Length: 220
Image (cartoon, rainbow, N blue to C red; front, top):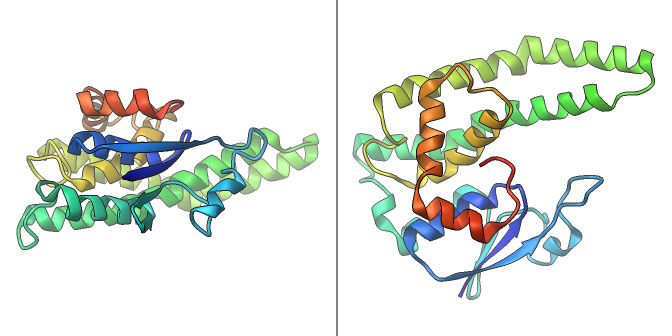
């Protein structure tokens, strides 16, 4: 039996969506973030040493990291979600599967961290210093990267319904979380093709079913 070790408001929601699209039977073991630190609970370390979600177990097999889980499920249960490797769709599939966490997520996470620094810095003079540092780093590095990434994705989706051409693929599951997170923070307001893509995902019956089973998720 496939088990998803699922943390609320996390990347593991996209794994539930993929399982629903594949029509597979699975069970969910729910974990809740610490209300103070927002980190995963220590119980997850019993499943994987890093104690992060998602983690998938399939019998004696344990797979961590979203991209690895998506590839495992696609190769084992849903080869239609992997385009032919020597095709343009196959090349796009591999690119976006790695782009999601390799290029897109790091500056988005950095923005989230600096936003929290701005909000929580005290007293006033420390807040001023923290804001100046955050503004400098975001303005000179992470901010421009976010803008460039969003424009790049917008152009791709202007010509493609899905990330690897005309059909849903593993790349779409991987790209869903960072785009949902970006949309929830207003980073896609000037990108109608990204907005339409996220709405297209959310309208899928399998996605809606995954939401019902997954529980709390702030990005849908």
